[in-house]
Length: 235
Image (cartoon, rainbow, N blue to C red; front, side):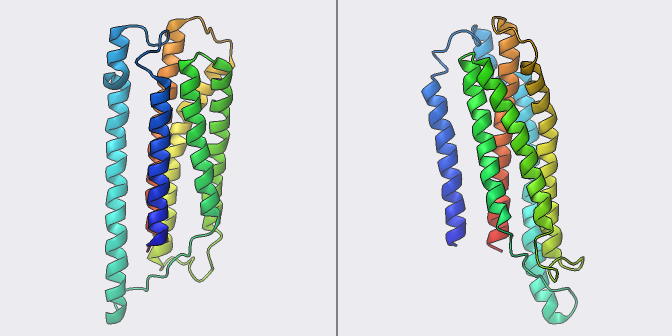
């Protein structure tokens, strides 16, 4: 229970920090990258944003189904073992590495939020550094998740243990979503690493939109991972 409360407090603190940072930017007063009423109206209702949020709704539904299946399998295994019709549910005992991986993902989200703020101020050098750092940290997180599969005890790492199967499934699906987003993030980092015309308003607007979408995507996956981690720790 205390672990779950800690995770929830961490999520709340992270969301509050992002909200405060966005308010400090005062986007309603910013001139330059978002210059017209049409652009301001497109911040939330442009096709890429609508597409992203629609995709995130699908992703949330997928993980919601996985969570329901997780609890159903865990509960049914407890009753099934008593009747001798189902394998026992052996808790994974989450490796401490998952805490480090969580910290890495938090820092990644912070880098992308920093990149979004840097675009607002047209600081393309900071954008470049933040995007490259986010790419590297994402790879570190995914590699850490894969390595964590090997750190559980041998008696838990069996095909008949549904708890370990769900552990690998949840972390793998989450990692695949990050790798998919990494493709877009890498392209954005490559774009600003080449000769980039800071004085070009269309170019800044385009990179700003891409960075904003990536930041939103990573923040969402951070919250998803926090939910998965809390699920694993409390079951």
